[in-house]
Image 1 (cartoon, helix red, strand yellow):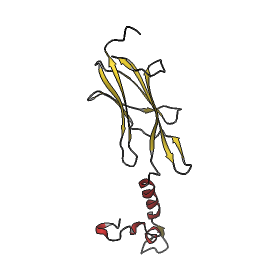
Image 2: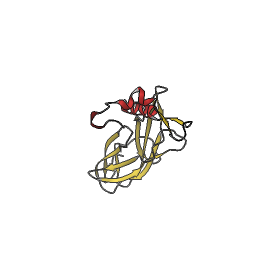
Image 3: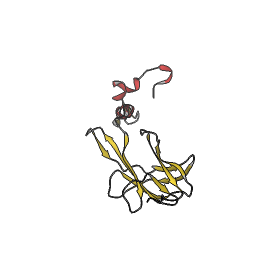
Length: 172
């Protein structure tokens, strides 16, 4: 890049550098257009959040063999956590389901993470990620935490607060 010590201030994205043709002095016939034009487009799209923009559309948690979210869970319950993620498509101007994240994680934390597990894409359901885990054998106020920070993507953060109790209520 040509941005050292304010020399050329943005010359890299100028018309002259975008149309730069690379030649080999020995073989004048082999002329190659540089990738500066595409690089400039990609940098501008990323800077103005027109590429790699993600969002969490929905999030759900429930017991295994149930579909309704609980206000609290008991110790050692098997919990299912689902989330749906979309990616902005600047060409169509719409959000589209995105299943390309391979390193998405869910943390079930009190003060420290008690459970940290991978949220895997659900086959056949674009944009859906799911995991099943067992609640820890400790009661208290816990959080479901999705915190995705990767270079080149926007930051995804989601926290849901709930309780894990020792014994179920007698009114159940």
